Length: 135
Image (cartoon, rainbow, N blue to C red):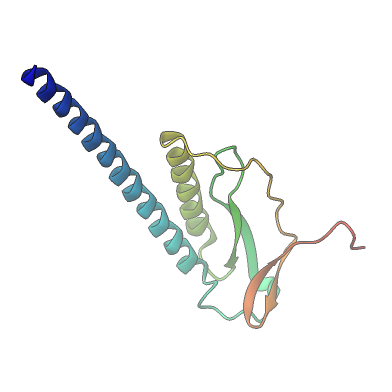
């Protein structure tokens, strides 16, 4: 009987230990995604380049919702290397999609419409979303 109790205890301990390993692996992957995202924000120049002419800014979709589609949109300066920047955004988007599948992430399945433009507001680039009531 003592052997059976010990075996059950060992199995439970192993399961809890594996569960904690999964949590720490998931957390580490989330931190890696967060780091990638911060690198993209920095590369976009959105926080370091003053916005004085909206023609010097563009936007792109970023991230992956578990149901599909973009997680959001990000403004970026046209003064940066666009090809390099969009490659970073794609790598992040692909990594987030893989994370969602691997960890069985779920979210709302709403569709985010793209912005219509980037505008300069108080020296910062802001995404502008047109409404259907505008002419």
